Length: 383
Image (cartoon, rainbow, N blue to C red; front, side):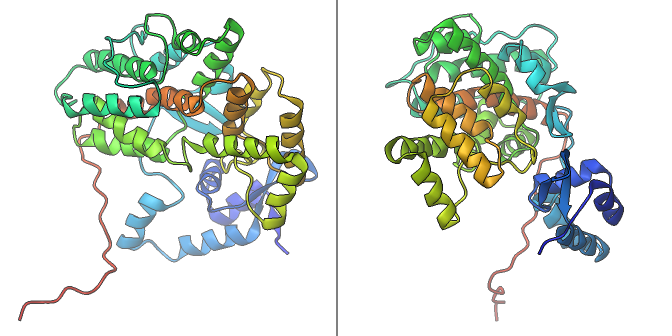
């Protein structure tokens, strides 16, 4: 049977601060559970802590250091954009959930980009082939990337102006109305939604703009480190974001909701639990006590009874809280937004963060170039 220890004991054994323990948890290196005696606190698997301590004591050879820098518990890229503290997400020191209560995504962009003036996502007319959606968005961005100018040797204010146009054009490709209104209103207009839904879109967009050093942010930073154009950096980031283990995770939740609607919550939950399959959208390694972004969004609208019952039952039986992917899929399903609009919202919002990471990376002179550690067939030397 697993044994569990407190944060203080984990820090003492590892010789680190609590922030590093949170980082170990976020990278899946350390299992965590709520303390049954005090749900405000967490407990950490003692065996995981002991294993991490042994690896630290084993020393850090060159190849071990290189591998751990890329795949290990602590990211090696410094950033001032966002972080996690005590189970909360912060944008440049501001609580993301509190910011989302009133701010627009334009204001969040001004904060993350450290822009000296208000951000405006109005954009030049977009030559879009076909209907709005993912294909149109990626095609438009690829076209811009093909002819984009390098970020090298250009003023920050010029790059900010280009970044604003990119976000606006991406939003239009996903179906937002053209114009100069805030993006949440333009999405509501494009999707023929009332003002109350526009407010929900505003909150969701702000909650999704950044999430520290994700795989998509790292991809955008790699492109930026080479001097690639801003649309190329954004395209690199969105390509990584499009995977079902990242920004398209809400698609798996949407499929799950479809199963619930067809088969009923009892049968779906029983199937997943009896087969040992994880329920998509429940639990998040960065938020052992629950994703505050999901809680904030779900509190703003009333779920259909069947969906609410399913979420409650899944949470009760697994102990895992719904994450932002559940909240986003529920928002789309409840208000009958267009197909793939969950990804549209996620990609548009996160484009703000991806561009912020790209702009921040421009302050670092070196190209990001990890080394490969060859493990294949030995080279055959010429006779």
